[in-house]
Length: 62
Image (cartoon, rainbow, N blue to C red; front, side):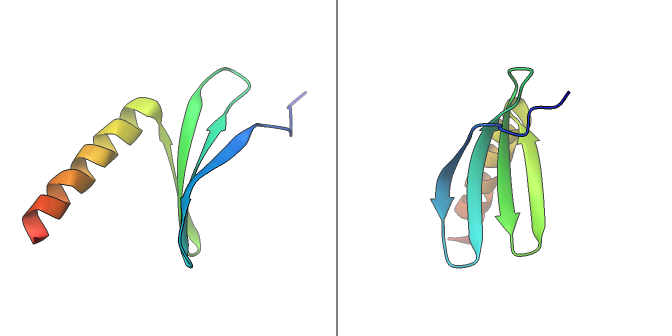
């Protein structure tokens, strides 16, 4: 039986976008990025790599 009561917490939110975190029943932390109609889901190690990518991107466009 699946638990539909997965704990979630909003990280940040703008008018059109949102990031949030969930603690899955197996103990895995999942990060979510909602971009209008698309939601990206990242396990912790992928989330950290994604953040590094965004940091490098910001450096390149300044």
